[in-house]
Image (tube, rainbow, N blue to C red; front, side, top):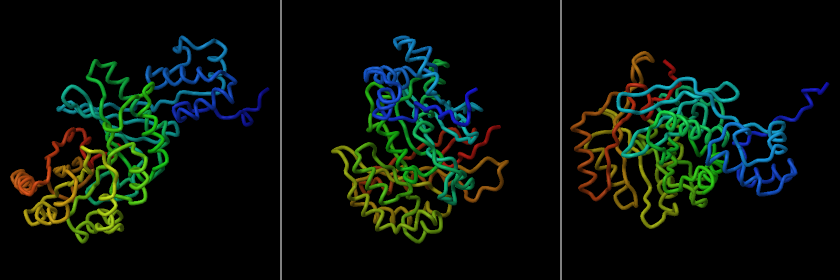
Length: 356
């Protein structure tokens, strides 16, 4: 009998980059290199979840793959659909951990909000995910597996295609930098998922070393979770993120390599009576007025009532408009981002593994 303890674990093919897959096929399976191109196409472009579905692979290769490899998709535990069409998927990973991903309907397509960690260590005061704490980083296969599951769900339900990605789900992407970069590199493969870098945005509280590496890679443009116009207020709202002083963070972003039409996005969650006054708008203009940027204003999304009392209040809608108008009057490109999926706890800051 074969000793199961001595049997090597199967390779998770969704967790191999293009070069790693080629090495696996050539060195481990002793197959010609072009077989890795075929396999890559089946995995990422066609979304095949079994080797039997790969009709142009030889029977010998399919047998070797069945013995030595696996295609590991996250399991779909719960699907929730909002009144506005937003879809939230509660996914179960291979080790039993769970994460959430959100599909947001846009004009003619969907944008997917991706998670990069199980939980989050940043503990921002307005974010439900931070209450979970950090369990672990996600692998490239788990990060990109969210996309494959989402594409399958959209196709099965006759919905519009997935075109844009925002790494704004659970976790701080730059604290899982290695797997983030592997994911972004794999995304751009023409024979794979084929989502261009201009359609991928990485949201971060701002970690200078990680931003430098991300900028040098040229793989994505950042969206910075700013949420306060002064260092003092940011320390109250985001004490861990604010360990990096604002002047240091902004200096790093001023040096971020941008293409001709690109700008750094600053995300600003508006908390009623906390950071949403005209005085705060004036402070924000002093902070960003000379910078190559745009600002997204996001109304605070309280957690569902069953999770307890909300720590903040939503801002007054007229105040949000006044805030936007002031920034625009000072030539700062500003948008009010509509909150989607609030009724299923899928809006910004609400992800907390709520299955019901």
